Structure formats: C-alpha cells, structure tokens
Image (cartoon, rainbow, N blue to C red; front, side, top):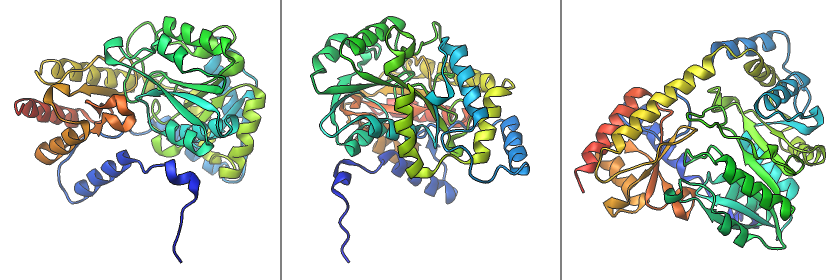
Length: 390
C-alpha cells in the first residue's frame, strides 16, 4: 500500500539539527573525533541529589499513574519558584506539568489558535514554534532580531505586523539560538502592545536560570495586564542537566491550562510519575549544582567570546544567557550551510547553520558551549585554522 501522509504534515519539516547530531554520533561510534557543538545538551551529569530522589520515588512505588497535569508536590515547588523569581502568585489550577517544554509549546498553540489566526514569532528562533503553528493551521508572521540591535525586538516592526487576525505572539528570553536576553524596557513595550491589542503571549523561559550578566531578565508576565494573557513555558532540561528526563511545565490562567491539559491527556496521559517526584526534589533541595554549572558555562562563554573576537573573519556578541554563541561568518562570503559543510569536512567541527532558525539567521552559525572544555578548545583551534583560509 502506498502511504500518503496527512496534509497537515506538508508544512512540518524534519529537524536538520537532529540529522547533523545523528551524523556526529555515527562518526563517534566508529572512533572518529568530532568537535561537536551542535546540541544544546549540558555535558554535566544530572546532579546526584536528583538521581537519588528518582531512585527513592521508584523504591516507594511511584511507578503507576499519578496526576496527569502534575503531582501536587511538583506544582507546589513550581509555584514557589515563580513567586521567588517574579513575585507572582499562582494557584495549582494554573500549573501544568508537560513531557518537556516542546510539549508545552505544542499544546499551548493547539489550545489557543484556530486555523487562520495569526501568530507572531521571532526570527531567528528555535524552529519548534514554526512547526507547531503550522500544525495548528495558524498564519505565521515574523519579527526580526538583528545583531546590530543586540537582538532586541524592533517595536515599530512588531506593531506593523499586527492585524485584526493576530491572536498570539511568542518571545524567547534568554534566546535559543542567540543567547540574547530582552531588556526590561523592551519587554515593557512588548507588554504594552500585547495589552492594547488583546494578544496572548507565550514566553519561553527555559534558560532563565542560566543568565550571566546583570540586570537579570524579568518575565513579561510581571508587567501590568500581562499575567492574565501570558503562558510561561519552562522546564528542567537545561538548568538541571535533565534533557533526557523530558519534563517541563507551563503556568497560565486556569482556563488556558484546562484547555492545554485536555490536549495533553490524549497525547501522553501525563508525565512519568517518578520523574515528577525527582523534579520536585530538583527545585526543593537544590544543592548548588545549578550554580556550579552556570559558573562553568560562564567561563566557557567568556573564553569563546574572547577567542572568536580576535579572529579577522568571525565575530560574535557576548550572549547574556543560555549556552549559545551566534557566530557571524559574513566576512567569509559563504552561506551558513556551505560554511557548516566546509568546517565539518575540513576540520571535523560540527556547528548548526543559522538559517535553520529562520531566514535572518543566514550569515551566522550556532555554537553550543554546553560541550566540554576540551571540545570547545578544539573548536576554537578549528576556527582559528579556518580563519586563515579566507
């Protein structure tokens, strides 16, 4: 029988980043060296106290179905974190545990957008938002984050994109792939636009604990009129080195969370029970591991920024958060794709083409400094050699 995929998949694309990640793993499995800085995955193990909490949960029998929207202990710790970070107070009915932030993105867009609704998404940005919006049947509009503007939102451009069909906008701060954080003033202007135009805002804050410079970024949910229209997405993968545990969370008004939960139930029937118990412990019993990792990422950040900006053909802004460098390669005259192929074939350094995150990423590549110090040193050496080729 000839298979024909559903029409809704026509605009849903395979992840080229995962393809490159798989190629790197194939070479490594054959014993070949690869300077792999493609993936946003901390090279640190999950902190021991979290693993111990997971084992304890297993031994106590938390292996069956539990609350599909998040166990009470986890919701309580998420509520404490939000209050500690923002001053905002949430009710358990306004919190949802998800199977990773990716699921939070999917169910938030699917719950809120009808076919033909318009959603405004940053460019460049992690590509899950485009694909989820396409599945929802929404019309995507893009606002451009430009290096010359330190990747802040151009307010005039944002205003120009809004029509009577606009229902939602997305912000990501700190940003993947840019490492940029939106300033308080920039967020205040975005919030004013959202309130004036009665827009929902999805704010992806997965990197909120990986920030390196003051002032620390604030959540857009804290601005006047924003709590009732904001969906906060966050999780454990990045700050707690738990990428494989697949647990995230969302905070939003109860009616939005209820809609998201109905979708989530029929997707996964809830997150893994013992993982939720471990995640509650991750927030409750934090032993300094997160701060240790943040400090190490900061050292790597400063090392890369210093070394890259010594080169004649490459440059970058110092990222404020996350663990990504958005490397400007425009002086080479190569496209992002061709530069990635060249760097991999000649020097076995694997980076991600910036245009995979949107058309305005052309002329850039993304480097993840979640890799080890040894890998990053080798990547710098590869870039230094490549710098002499142009």
